[in-house]
Amino acid sequence: MAVENAVPGGEAKNNKRVLVVGAGIAGLAAALRMHQQNWDVVVVERAQSRRSSGYLVNLHGPGFDAAQRLGLLPRLTPRDIGLYTSILVHADGREKFTIPAAVAQAAVGNRALSLFRGDLESALYDTVAEVADIRFGTTVQAVTQDTDDVWIWATWLERSRSRTPPHTYPQVRARPSSDPGARPRS
Ligand SMILES: Cc1cc2nc3c(=O)[nH]c(=O)nc-3n(C[C@H](O)[C@H](O)[C@H](O)COP(=O)(O)OP(=O)(O)OC[C@H]3O[C@@H](n4cnc5c(N)ncnc54)[C@H](O)[C@@H]3O)c2cc1C
Image 1 (cartoon, rainbow, N blue to C red):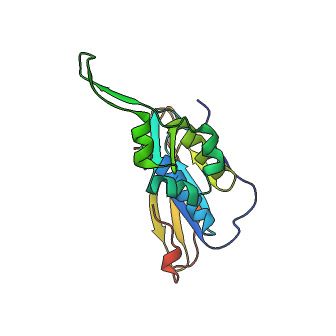
Image 2: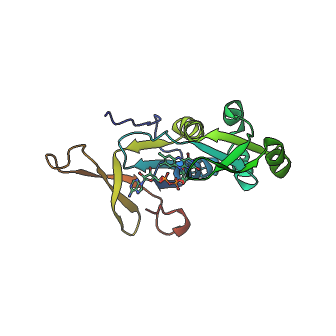
Image 3: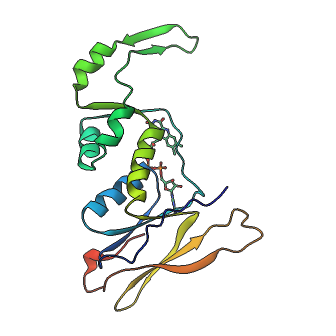
């Protein structure tokens, strides 16, 4: 499988550079929020490519608020399948009880989205890929620092590890350690 990296061109815009480990829902959401707070973001994901599978995810309450803060609603709203009637069944298939769609609607109100996880991942990935450097097949090997910089040592994971040793190289240079709040963390 091809390594699928999204690397926007150009040098880092400022000194606030952060590394996010993991391009799941949480990592991509964190990356987007950090970008919105004016950080240059690098995301490393040890999987060789995106994992866009999954079933339903309901966003309401704080989940809906978070999607709105992240600016994702224009991308997510067209993918909303709407609230639905849920039927819980016993192991043998007999119905246990039913939650009608109208009851779910009354419980969560209009600030709700029912999405396939893949659609949520795609909305996040497509947004983050426009603004951050996303490196698949990569993980953090070590974090070191000297008086001026913090260095993240990342390992590029070969698909066949037994044949080719990992390649190690410095990936992220952060601002001077005199500003501890700006140091990237693994
Ligand atoms: C394929 C899939 C399908 C899912 N389907 C559903 C669903 O249908 N409904 C539902 O409600 N929930 C589903 N979930 C669960 C839901 O998406 C997660 O529980 C929730 O989004 C939390 O995601 P996360 O980003 O915290 O963790 P994860 O999705 O596990 O993401 C963490 C990421 O970090 C990467 N990572 C971990 N360690 C390292 C490292 N050292 N270096 C580099 N990368 C690293 C992992 O490879 C992974 O991609 C699914 C999860 C997955 C992965």
